Amino acid sequence: MKKTELLNSEISEVVARLGHKDLLVIADSGLPIPDNVKRIDIALTKGIPSFRDTLNTVLTELGVEKAYVAREMIDKNKKLYLELSEQFGDKLVIIDHEQLKEMCKNAKAVIRTGEYTPYANIVLESGVEF
Image 1 (cartoon, helix red, strand yellow):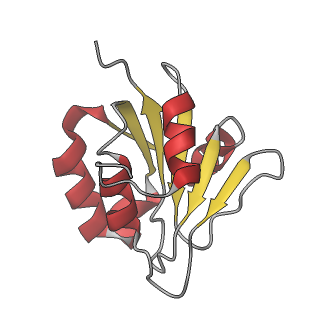
Image 2 (cartoon, rainbow, N blue to C red; image 1 turned 135 degrees about the vertical axis):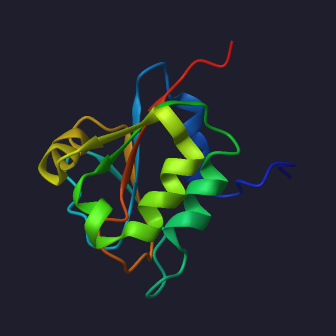
């Protein structure tokens, strides 16, 4: 059995296959997911699992070079924006929500959580850990 926090085999496999600059999205329950992108749907009910729990667990195995969030998060979900700003620092890049949705088309996978707050979506750009 795995020793790390991330137990979901689908997510673990996607993370293991990511190369430098590959994209992985962690999404709230409402983000549209392109048909051609792998969907890992872990949503159970409103708020479960949460965006934060999912993100923090994925980050135990994923090195991130940049993290992209929608500008709309600043006003519509300020608490989350401030938390992510503190967590990612200068790695956090602010883009329009429409740009974020476009980036999803190039993601290796989108992890759909049960998050039920607005604009709780992040595009993670895989980094290099050496």
